[in-house]
Length: 524
Image (cartoon, rainbow, N blue to C red):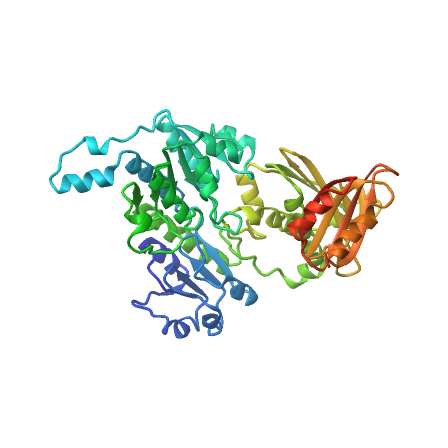
């Protein structure tokens, strides 16, 4: 086997690779050199400097693994790699401690005004009054995202005598209790926090999470720390809040655009700035080197890896049987993720009929991937979905019943959250025709569509007509409709497959129809 280390890697990691493979570590490898260098290698290891694009991958005749020595994979065209059957791995856990420690270091520097005091003292000034700070003891730390890094930050903050609260809809009360962290809602977090620290991924849902409205809801004089991802904070709104005196200070290791240039936030007197140093410790770099080397060797040997970013190729014989059900499980997970609410506590899988005797780990992994992927920083795939769920305190259980009653095969999933429980069941008709056939006691026959509308209503004459008329008047085309009810004149559910997304104003109009209980748009 031959491995290319395109960027710097800790010496111990390189030594581990060399125990089982020929390793090339060229110096000064340029983008122009990369296509030739990657042509005859089985794996390539990169950091953030080297770009692995679709054009580069066209030259990789035998590449099987791309390893990112770090967490982020923005410099790797993961989709192109997946299309080519190339596994992408990273080192997701290696910088947890260093990032948590850097968060506390930044907070202490901000609270005690250390950078400004050092600069003044180095120039010969010995003024104390200008640099009066605040204690952490007794203050409330609000954590957004109680994953691995957020949990480590909580432990360290508690050692300083801080009260720690957190907002994370996908963390269970049990995990909060283990960490002695009070889980609160979004509004309560903002209202109660003296210090706010962010530890969530940058997604469309979290971009500018800390905006003008969120900043206004924070206590006057609150401190903000961001060692997670640039873009989580509306930087213009933060600068304005600092200038107005509403926010007491900010400590920023990351920016939306890096480097951010001079001026603005990074030159503000109440802002502490570092150049994205969260993982920059000798220990973290050693762990990253060893972890990524171990993952490369495991992947090349065909063993499971915990840091897989994209799903590995499923053997052809497995796909023939499980492929349609993997697709079904993913669709059920996407629907459950959007229909559910509250913190997920438990997911119960039930395999009924012929499917009960199959190897089903791919199925619950596909469901969990769809359930968790929209809310987690770490890429979620068929290999790591169950591990990530358990890491967040989500209990997983499985039941098998080979008898089967209404269907020859049935996949039933029950998701229990702090707001209640949701049950979905599906099967596959023919060779590849996934259907949702049960939803919370309602029997339906739904072909999942890209755009769906789930409507709960009272079972009375004219309801379907009212809904159809509103959609038709808005030029929203109905591709399919399924109706289920618990009893005549009782409660019913309509599930519509649509050709178009539903505008927000139309959703409000539907909710105002007499007899409509709830309306939810769902992406398939």
